[in-house]
Image 1 (cartoon, one colour):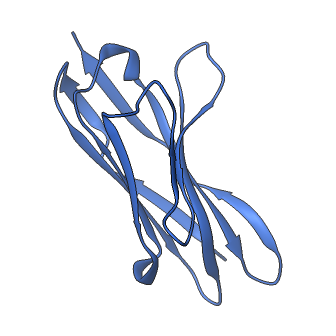
Image 2: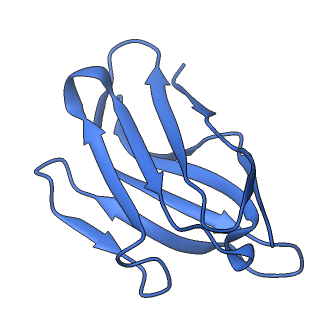
Image 3: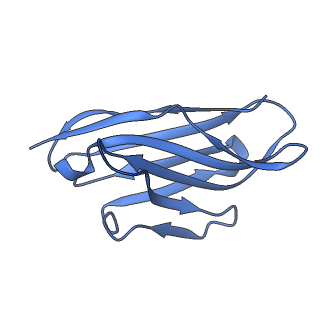
Amino acid sequence: QVQLVESGGGLVQSGGSLRLSCVASGSDFSVSARSWYRQAPGKQRELVASISRSGDTYHADSVKGRFTISSDNAKNTAFLQMNNLKPEDTAVYYCNFNIRTTIMRSYWGQGTQVTVSS
């Protein structure tokens, strides 16, 4: 049984920073691509950033230059460094890993709330 556990959300003022972490735990698995999504109230879940196992990254235009995704393959983790946060970044943030056990499938974290006050 593989699980993803997120941490690092919270309340921050506009212009502040937060760092989100997501770690996969379990046995007999390997992690490939890792992503961060977010969902604001009344909106659809959207892709924020992703990173391949080889380190290629993608960042949505809305966060480019402010957010940075990174990962540690040895520790099955992913991070999202969020700088210069804006009120419109307020959302629940979810990590998503593509994980192979006996099959390849997508796993989601439980979500962590990020609230940016103006």
